[in-house]
Length: 180
Ligand SMILES: CC(C)(COP(=O)(O)OP(=O)(O)OC[C@H]1O[C@@H](n2cnc3c(N)ncnc32)[C@H](O)[C@@H]1OP(=O)(O)O)[C@@H](O)C(=O)NCCC(=O)NCCS
Picture 1 (tube, helix red, strand yellow):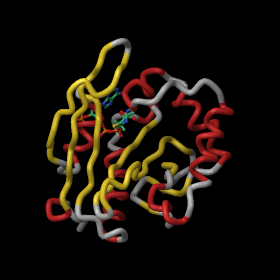
Picture 2 (tube, rainbow, N blue to C red):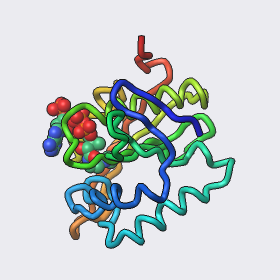
Picture 3 (cartoon, helix red, strand yellow):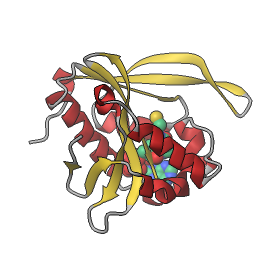
Picture 4 (tube, rainbow, N blue to C red):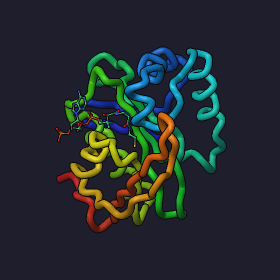
């Protein structure tokens, strides 16, 4: 699993010592309800989650999770990864950022870099992204990277006692804006 560098960020495989940094945002309900996972209850739970990633076999190396680190001090501020292999040349992407760092275009930078990796290294034909219909901030990330809105999955997941719709975005290789 290669390290990926951008202007402000370094993406590298997550490791056990990242647990406190991930727990710091994983325990916040404003993050977990948008991201679609239950609030992290303990540091131990996050360590188990990281261990599961470390144990992924070689043939799932493309699904390993990257820690998003600030280049300056190496601090871990989020994660990004291909969450699913839908077809051998179509992967789904997912991401979470610590709220202290929202609004600086950092996730479009990280996702843009992993997309480049997906098209150039894994020779993907398409990348998909699924988010709650009310998650405008995640949809903005998709839009900034030229993903197209493709579908609405009605009543897809229960949240706060209601079944919420999800929306699916897709980016074809030929639509991808290659960095110059
Ligand atoms: C979605 C997310 C990764 C965006 O990352 P980011 O680096 O902040 O992305 P951007 O800086 O491009 O901001 C995207 C949008 O978020 C919104 N936003 C910006 N700052 C915000 C803040 N402090 N609070 C709430 N929303 C904010 C804006 O609508 C912005 O769009 P704009 O640039 O057109 O104004 C981040 O909000 C996040 O981690 N959310 C929780 C987890 C999640 O939703 N994951 C995706 C699951 S599919």
